[in-house]
Image 1 (tube, one colour):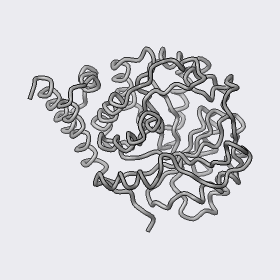
Image 2 (cartoon, one colour):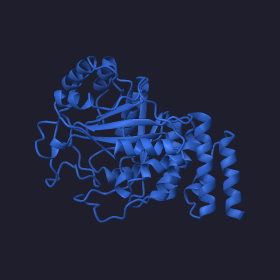
Image 3 (cartoon, one colour):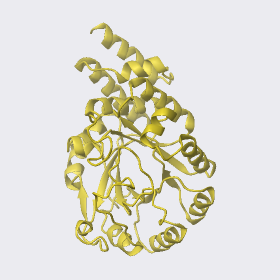
Length: 341
């Protein structure tokens, strides 16, 4: 065992014993590249997972209910100024028609993504909740409608909201504002705090490998997230939109993202860490591979095929990556996805 590997063993053992990693120690683990050290990190993250959350993998079925967005983020194809992508906004009836076709798994989550679409108002949300009450075996609901007013969040809480994901991408104010030129880093933090005040299970996100980001920024992200009290963390590689200002920027790598997932498990212990949808863009098998590095959820995109031709109707459901493939791979890893009993 070389000196680098010996250091990795020491750091991982300290993390597993409850020691809080320092910024320098986090950077050391995020920067690993040799095969021996990476395997030590991977095994440690698997051990941390077994000790804290066990072998069960939660499927997260993700449904985009709108691709209209009020914002102009520099990496996203659905930025408000982009006229090159088709848009759709699902009615409540369309959402229900899709949701009723989701495979029945007792521990599944349904993530409803509304981007930052101002037309997803409280009247729409109230109609959603009313319709969901009539569905049997509905997955546990998670909402992601961007930054909203405190009154909006209060009303959602009254309607029954228990989980909300407010993506952060980075906890560096400078980097955040370069990615989101029309938003304020501090407004985003305030929205997260408003949700935490309501005792909502709040999730956030990290994006690995975007321009001007380095491992020190990622280390700061982990420290900030650990201190924030958020319970869910989605980690994915940077994938710039084809029509975005950052379209020509290099993508984040699979290995650097796996390193980040492993460190997240060692630091955040019992957090829910699903693999991000962007993994599948780089490699169809990497979303499942992330389960070997400490992830305990797989995000699956519900794609109504009719959206591409007729955005007003969504009936037949396909799931990407293929649900049966993911289920088979999960079982091959000795992990479990619980079917509805």
